[in-house]
Image (tube, rainbow, N blue to C red):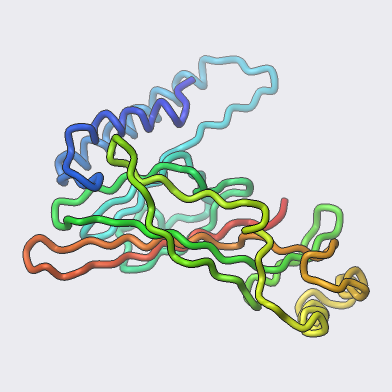
Length: 243
């Protein structure tokens, strides 16, 4: 079976002859898209011919995001199957949901553009409080958050951007709050049964309350070759906080 790494290796080989900052022209970008589609087709055929003991086959994909001035390829990120807008040419900001368990941490990103130069990517994350109950959970994803600083992504020897990874301590960071405010928010949003679960906790990280990463942010910037204007695109990846 053709794996996600095999697919992305084709992309890397295509990029080896590209410009700096993982920037390539439209013809090369179309070649990448074709290679990815052809590889996924081969993968599907191989999958149909294979017999797996659990009768399940999971094929990771490259997530492609297209803006007017550039295209972005994220290695092995599976997005929610209902995110139909991902196939469209985006405006300046795109927000979408990743599948449970998916992350951009440590993943590789390629950019193709014939309009921009000096391409950079910055990454940050956001944490939120979630209340857990043996699998079920109530997420306070629209309440208070901790936001990390923006960090500029490094580029590997193949010209691909490397996403940041975070520690358990990073996952648990949260601004100082009055615990009574948290309990009141849970009572309002999640209702009484959830409130009863946390009525004796002292901190947001005391089970069954917990703090976790709820969103990743990628800020992609480049300079137009024709007039020097700085172009910036923002990608917001919603990270499911429970099963």
